[in-house]
Image 1 (cartoon, helix red, strand yellow):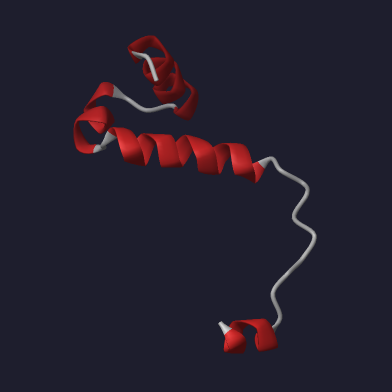
Image 2 (image 1 turned 60 degrees about the vertical axis):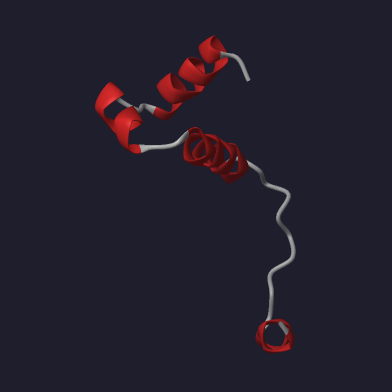
Amino acid sequence: MTTPLFLLRCKQLGLTLTELDMLTIGIINDMFTERENDDFDGWTEVASQSDMDAF
């Protein structure tokens, strides 16, 4: 990932420069990935209690 792309991702997440001092690159990448997953409508299977017990 290039610096301009990283800064674009930070801007898309609405992060301030102060917040960037407290976060790592990995956390910011995870935050962006999770934000993109929030818009995904393909989650059709929900775990049941038996699935959780088997886990």
